[in-house]
Length: 134
Figure 1: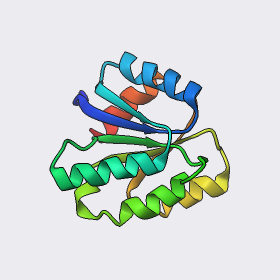
Figure 2: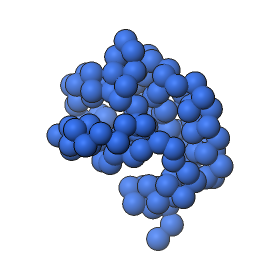
Figure 3: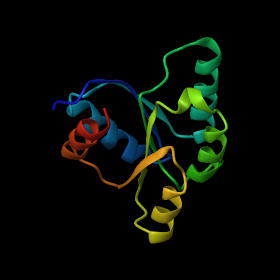
Figure 4: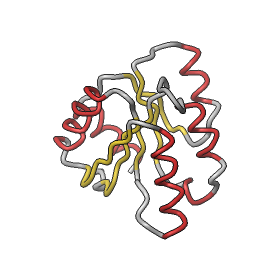
């Protein structure tokens, strides 16, 4: 079974270097048409909220870091969950440099988080993720 193309992916991470590398990997996979970067989770949340109100295109995929200033990944998840049904079809994954067991267990408590990925990811990871969830 081959994976469908992912129209839009959001990468939410405050690490500029990781964003550059991750965006290149996502593009190289050939599975993602558009990658939108957010260095602040608050801006990503505002963008999603606005898209819901204006019927703009939502992302199909979100890769979310945990450790960020202003609003961390867990705070983002608390606010994101409150958006309700419209975001239930978005595939959301934690993408973190943390291999902390507590973080991995905490991620399991959020039904909208489909998996916990650790940095760095490669093209093969994206292909497997796309085959499994899209």
